[in-house]
Length: 257
Image (cartoon, rainbow, N blue to C red; front, side):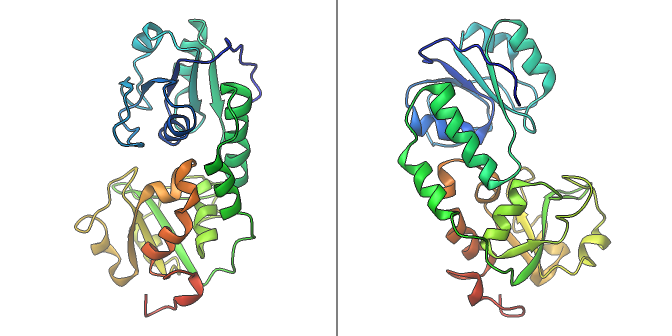
């Protein structure tokens, strides 16, 4: 975000308040994470103290852990918590992620400038996976992120761009809000071929969500759409399979998904 971050070198103790970045740091700089949120589910078996959630971190406990660096995100975390940590003398690195290219650049800066470690091989693989322009979309889609009220992915959104690379265009990508609230009738009447229902942040499941949209509903792994880290290396083929596209979106056509 352009705010100077006074780093203590070397950075050996890190608290991550962003699940995507927790995985990225754990894989790239093993042993540096001393704290993470309860939503940091990857890598499995991560040994780091849990400091509550992304929206309600235990600031007192984070201070006690004496990290060299706290990693946060403008969208995931609250400005209030970032300010309290900085006022306590703890450096906080805040990322802003709205596109795949921005995610890759931000990750590289995090590794090289903040953590002082080389760019990992998985980053190179992720860069290669998204090197070509996104294909011409063969389907229009809505990505729901919550229900009651129903909320969908809108403008300037990392998930929308990943979806486009997988072969589907977000019908709400030009909406004025990044996560607009919409009614069921608006979703059903949007012209979407697919209604994508990730398992996070709302845990859509076989008996919670698809019943509203019939054959258009697609349950997908949310991590493939919204996480920017090692999952990017194989997110596209896995997401295409979950959307019903097969190995490539050209293999799918409406009515056969």
